[in-house]
Length: 116
Image (tube, rainbow, N blue to C red):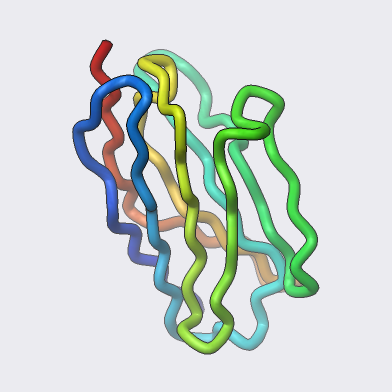
């Protein structure tokens, strides 16, 4: 079992920045990939960024060059640095962790609101 707790969301003006954090606990040694997804009302949850245990990263085209995902293995925490935020980045950001042959886990989400 893995527990994920997000923090760092809030209200920011367009062009601003936020750093989201996701702290993992439980069977963290089994986690391979951690990532962030975003959900807005009426839409499916969409992939934003991911990082694997080797440090490899992937990003959605909509956030490339603006968002950076990083991982502190000593703290079992993943970060999402969001820069140059746009109103369309508004949504609930969910942390995700996957374990090979062990399933996937989600945090409770943190709200990001970008005002124009």
